[in-house]
Image 1 (cartoon, helix red, strand yellow):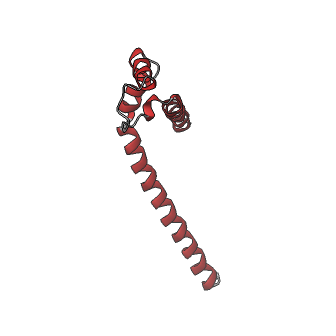
Image 2 (image 1 turned 120 degrees about the vertical axis):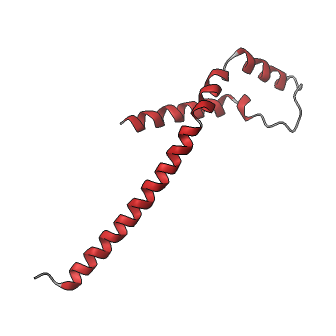
Image 3 (image 1 turned 60 degrees about the horizontal axis):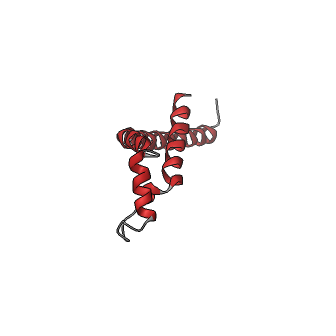
Amino acid sequence: MEDNKKQIARIRLMERRLNRAVAAVKRLEAALDKYEAVQEDIAVLDEYYGSELWRQDLADDEAGRLPEGLKRGVLSEDSIWNLLSDSKELNERLKR
């Protein structure tokens, strides 16, 4: 018969592993739900980035024709490119 202390220790360890895994799965599920919800946004940004509209918006910004307090992260080449690149890598990872 196995030592009762070892058995209890094993059950406690397995319980911690179960709780940690359940929490991680729930967090991932919620994150995937949020990610799925923004797929249309990502597709629209992909079309906008580098388009004539984007180029015109960038030119107007550079010419000072846009309001000073306007957030303009979408006019930064890096912001959208990084998002699209990260999204592509994430999609490939999810496929694997």
